[in-house]
Length: 338
Image (cartoon, rainbow, N blue to C red):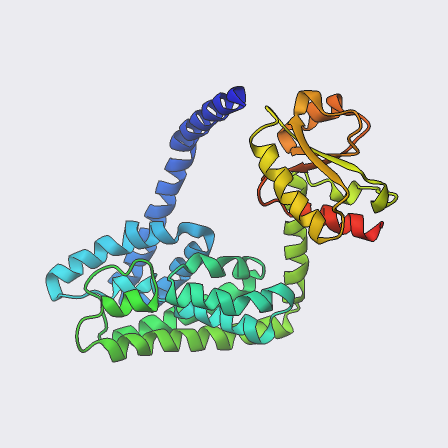
């Protein structure tokens, strides 16, 4: 474990150096490009079209760079001149994202639809815009919806002379209203509402008629499968002939005392609740696993050592001894083969 920690530290330092020299310049170039794009629209009084740059950049998780690196400095300068600034609303407006999530509530499928209402609360009231980015990434055509919504909201803000006195961070409706000067609440709410409505109206037919919404569930299944495989989940390979034939499960970690003991306690409770109270669940060092172990649960990084110590046992590889989804999968597998 000590060697692993030192190795992770060294690898982290190397990756940091690579990012500093290789990634940081690229990000700086992108920031300058976006700043030039926004500046062009400002100089030519075409501010609503800035959404063409802002909304895709947000979805690519450059939202903080856009807001705090480009728009906030411009907004602070404008506040010094007129006491408020529309620049603070360009990226922080939750309306476009709200429209996307509302469209998923109406026309989404599977988990994308069921998770959208909760995402609305997190996005609109919590200000965590990142929550709706994956919904767009699974259907990139929805970029058209957020661009249209963002542009419409900015247009309304301009007409009604709306601006904030300071950056709204996080970009929740509550933070935005808190930064709205007295007398500007109607205009602010109008811009957010219009942005949400336009985004919703554009996104709804895209979800219903482009056929992309049917890929959302499939995409999530693929992501879930890849995630499980990356965690070393071997449950699909389990071949338990009979759940009643399993008498001993061993949790193995480096020392056999800390994490494995806690994991064994968690699994004991789950097995007892499922009617498998007669199965012995013990913990041991990975180097000395009992030879009568039928199933060995261990961290994925200890796979080779566990296989060498107990070659005849079925390995279940996890990454979190306290809250691994593999525990429930193991119990279900035992039930199916009872």
